[in-house]
Image (tube, rainbow, N blue to C red):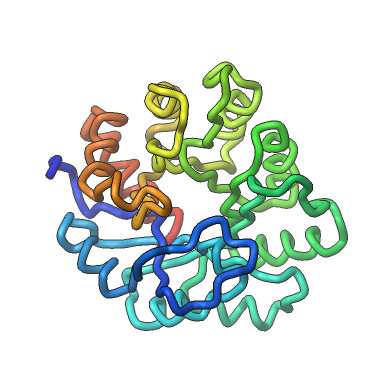
Length: 268
């Protein structure tokens, strides 16, 4: 296992069981369970002390299993997928259970909801009032506008998987430049994770290097993306820790990305 400075925080992984109710539109059907017990065993084996469960889009607004994990383990936090019709009383209960943000997984959508609609302006205000962030994944061509709308509502943004701007322009893509600009504005964080999901050879490393140069001390967090949906047999947990060491060679900065910044972002 690659050495690291602890306590390490894994800022994005999933837990589920195969008998949970998948959406009819689910893009992936897991072939095995990823239970909370299996997850914690994996974290412990790799020296990871704290973790943030990412809402799995496969299950939509079914947050029940994640909620159960949060109530049983104080070392965990989570994001949720919700319906905009849920009221403040439901969201307050979720906050008290350990949810710290809402996930908008909009990248697969040809058309997205109007984030400036009454429903979303109300939802974003509630996020601001609760101290929650928006956990966002969107298409490159929409990303800048979506991030700015969330920021304008007074809500922090956390972007998945190095921004996942997997395009021919790569680090020169306007969307990736928009991510760097958002980091500079101070309300956006990016996860160093999921490099294996890039299809362009070497692009994940190039994007990670640009992000480390722009926001390595205060605006980046590390994550494993366990159990590596659709790549279960190609990636190991140790691989993702090795990615952290490769992307962030400075040990002091690596401590910030792997521990100090996510502890402040998710646990305070």
